[in-house]
Image (tube, rainbow, N blue to C red):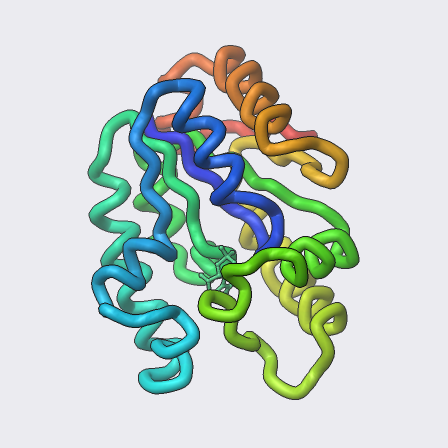
Amino acid sequence: MNIVLIGPRGSGKTAVGRALAARLNRPLIDTDDEVERKAGKSIRDIFEQDGEERFRGIETEVVREAARSEGAVIATGGGIVLRSENVEALRRNGFVVHLDAPPEILVRRLQEDASTRSRRPALIPGIDEIEEMRKVLEARAPLYAAARHVLLDVSCASPDEIAETIISRIKKFEPHTVSGAGASDSDG
Ligand code: S3P
């Protein structure tokens, strides 16, 4: 089983992924890193020079490869849920954890994150960051809900605390419960 982290920009998927991988002694696959490696350029450059669709295409190739791993921690890009084939591949042998927080907190974290410039081109050009975050969250909320096994609010916790919470939640699940079709959503 892989552990797959999904959620919006700024929800800390990469930082939590690192904490989880270190605690469990598992490899970490960061899909944004893999996309940049495959393309040989930054995500911002892919968006500007080749367009978002090209980015989504490379991202899907990366997901297919990552989903073939066994026992990896997979930190994904915020738009991974836009393609149902990504979600199907990741859920097949993955426990999917949705990290979320209110838009104001997510935007503040993005402003503090040095990787934002090279990694986070505008998704809806011409509107301010908080407005963009609200619109993106609204559009993607049902996709995240359908993709996840558990939902965690990350507003007030550190990456290490969130990693601990994820480990305790996973222990409650039998592997067959989370890997088979129709696995239950335990957040509600
Ligand atoms: C995106 C999120 C980014 C990156 C790309 C697109 C999105 O990843 O994949 O800029 O569509 O939300 P993070 O969620 O790691 O910032």
